[in-house]
Image (cartoon, rainbow, N blue to C red; front, side):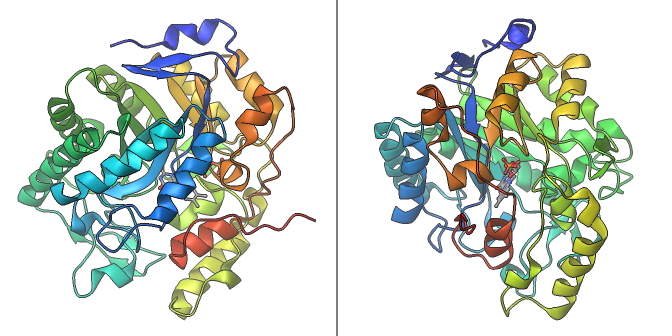
Amino acid sequence: MQHSGIESKSKIKMFDPIKINSLELNNRIFKAPTLECMAAADGSPTKQLTRFYKRAAKGGCALMTTGLSYVSKDGQAYLAQNGIHDDSLIPAWKNFTDEIHEAGGKIVMQISHGGRQVDPRLLDKKKAKAPSNVPNFMYLYKAHELTEDEIYQIISDFGEAARRVKAAGFDGVQIHSSGGYLLASFLSPITNRRKDEWGGNEEGRFRLFEEIYTTVRKKVNDDFPVLAKVHLGDMMVMGYPYPSNYQAALWMQALGVDALEFAMGVFENAMVTFARGKMPVSMADDHVKPAMKAYWKTTEWIYKPLSGVKRPYFKKAAKQLKKRGLSIPLLLAGGVRRYDDIEEILSEGTADLVGMGRPLLREPNLPNKWKKGEKVDSSCISCNQCTIDLGINANPLKCHHKSE
Ligand SMILES: Cc1cc2nc3c(=O)[nH]c(=O)nc-3n(C[C@H](O)[C@H](O)[C@H](O)COP(=O)(O)O)c2cc1C
């Protein structure tokens, strides 16, 4: 497997190529994974989803990652979420990747299990599944603590999903182990209180990822890019990850993961973690229970001083990862808005690829502009109208901010 972490000592430029395993990329800009809420009821891609990614592909980023896509029906976290849980979906996803490739794009599918963060509308009388039954303060429920048999079923579901991702023509698969969803909740001592071999200490909490990665790798073989998005911690304290899960990232590298993205935080504190910015709670529509709105309003008020986006907010953590020995390609996203920030991150060797979620949603064409020498910055103001309308209302992803 070819990696390029050694490049971190040389001055990387935005339009330098890079290889992630067998995947050749022609620049260092990626579209960070964003839930889209554009799939059909069975999880298959719609014309709207295909249009969305073709537009992004034509904008010039080297790599796109889909939003979290469920590996099993009980791992579905959102309405209209992408599914890769059944072989019958392979042909539709193959048509999708064919169209994206024709448009010049490269695309990796992010595979996920929702864990303790499943929209209550999807649960009916069932319970969300998690390592331990700690409460979810946003959705106001307690999850069911997974049994060993259920854990083994989930490991198998991830392997099968990865096999389908490859068969459907994706350029790689990303195992979603951040954002507070199932795999992230296993890594965290706050949400994983188990005393058996799936918890108890750092090794135990890492075991689910290890088993999943090993199964996935067997299903897709050595030359297929397997990326991971690692959960570095649930909370941030003054810009630092706390508690920090750097060891999990290094163990992922040792296992053979081809490239690593990371984030911190859970949905309950997204406005100060992975989707930092304001949270326009008033946009939440009528299905949202008053208690849930009250939760968001309170956290919005408490977190206000910490939710500003002034700079790429995970840069320090990226530096820490490299310092501690991460040498596989590191993908950094979160608060990247300025051309100069990207140049700096790359030339300092802080990360190997720089990603954007909200900015590319607003202006997919930014990489093309930069290639032409127009050094404009993104006009995304991190207003998070996209986040609330999508993650809470389950409406299709779009930028809502009107320019003055
Ligand atoms: C609307 C929205 C949806 C997101 N969905 C996902 C997702 O499905 N998977 C994931 O790993 N991260 C998800 N994220 C986090 C992004 O990948 C990214 O880390 C975050 O938006 C910060 O980057 P930005 O400041 O460039 O938007 C989402 C973020 C937003 C705002």
